[in-house]
Length: 153
Image (cartoon, rainbow, N blue to C red; front, top):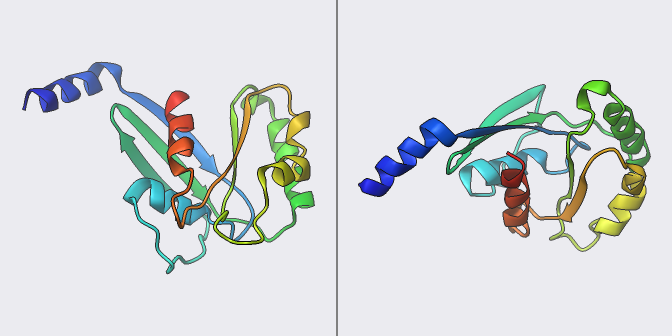
C-alpha cells in the first residue's frame, strides 16, 4: 500500500511524457509492435492501419504516446528519400531517430547492417540514430526498444 502511494506521489511530481511517431513501410509490423508494447501480446489478426491509431504506454512514471501511422507500399530506396526529407524539416532538428528492423523471426529478414546501408543512416549526423533488429511476434529485443524510449522520455 505504501509503495502504491509513493508511486502515485512520484507520478504527480516526476511524470514524463514522450511522443513517438511510428512510420514505415506497409506490412512492416508497426501496428503489431505497438500492440506488443501496449498490450504485451502479439496477434496474427492485425488489419492494416487506415490513417493513424493513437495508443498510450504507461511504464512507471513515463507515458509514451505512440502515433501508429498507416504504412505506404514502397521500397527501401523510396523510404530512404522520404526519411531524409522528413529529417531535413527544421521542426524535427535534433530529435533522436530509432529505426527498427522488424520481423527478425523470418529467415529472409533484413539485418541491421542492411537497413543502415539501405536507409543511409550513417550519413545522418545531426541527431542520435539507433537501429535494432526486433521481432514483435517473438518479442525479441522489445525490451531494448522500450529501454531506448524510456531513456529519452
